[in-house]
Image (cartoon, rainbow over all chains, first blue to last red):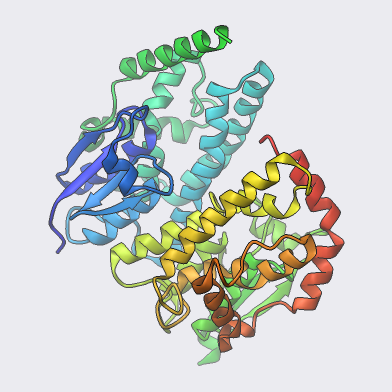
Length: 232
Length: 232
């Protein structure tokens, strides 16, 4: 059984760092939570992730693992005796979980970011359109994976719940900021219920960022961007 | 015995490195399969039915199961069938193999592609070439004096990097841009040669002359696309 020292280099607003915190929380693993200032990256971060220089980075007994989905799979494989398994046991179900996890990052996250960060109204509107198209597919994926049970992983939280779970804080913050919830009750009732259910779990509550804090963070960043733009 | 084994079929386009990844994995595991050749210009109902989300190849059909996305297929094949393991056994080494495969498909891909197809006199070309070579140097370092990324035998990362072994030379010839040479990347060149000459790999490599004709025929399209996507 793997023990040893775990450190997580992260940033509290990051949904990708949150994924790793969720995985660690659901597995019941302790770790040192190191908050990085992304505008002044530490030597440890740069030396641990020289290729991307991004968070999250998990350092286990001095060895770094990068990329949130790879880190979550690592946690599941290295700590196989500790807490529940995140990935399903069956290879086909694992393939389905991996397929949809890749879809979340390649399609959903990219278009959702565009709804926040699009430079023009047209870009933002296109972001909304693509996000809702992606959510429609994920709603069907939830139906297929959950088979009527509460989570993508079935009775218990699994890999895909943790992957999407990283976004839950921003789902609530985005709704307060822009009135847009990608998982609204009319279009995606299953995912809408899943967001609420997931957020109520003790292991999730322990690490989910406060919505109002995220809203303040977003407003601060918007003000900075606006100031920078008007100074040009 | 053969009648009890669910049939394995692979839908693919001739000449695709992503399809090759899936084929070589099946061959390394000694799994008999039927190759269903699809046409990217005129996609079959079978493909659209089995991969409605991305409408791309490869698609693995195993009995009544459908698996899409080449790296997901690699892991599925590794976990489902007996034979030499494609991914390392150690969780940290597995995380590293996944990390570098992801690197090849994401960060590495764009400057690599753009280096070949940007116009000679475009000011951005040099920057792409520099970045592509920097990325190649990083991969060179990962070989660490081994014959393959997987050690003594072809493994997950070697298969993931197949485009750099067989397709690279063809693309260099068609575009007139040489990124890789034996002086700057000696380990990498040795690796590429070892990969394409491996007995199992050879069986599923597309014919080089056919690839040459294909890429030559599409040169203008690639160059136009490179210009069009420059600022994305």
